[in-house]
Amino acid sequence: MNETDFVVSNISQNVKALVQVTYSLAENRERKIRGLRKAMAATGVRKGIIVTMDEEGEAEYDEGLVCVVRGWRFTIKPESYFLQYENYSCQSENNSGDACTPGDCNQK
Image: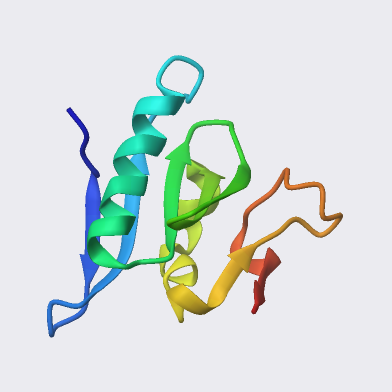
């Protein structure tokens, strides 16, 4: 079974963001990513977020960008991850793919 934990939409019910939440991707990486990718394909949203305890990074798939972010970063200012959601990609300052924070998002 595949699922997405949170679907963020505006008042017009347009899907703006898809969010998965997990303590760690160590044991359920494929399941969490598969569920998010299916939701991205179904909604047309080109970026999904996975919130974890300690992991960060990103991966590009046919459906779009999957960005993994630490929970504490996400909770400080979650709306930063949704601003012009489909027009941003997450990249670390050193381009290593290790970080995905609002300040590191670059407009395409």
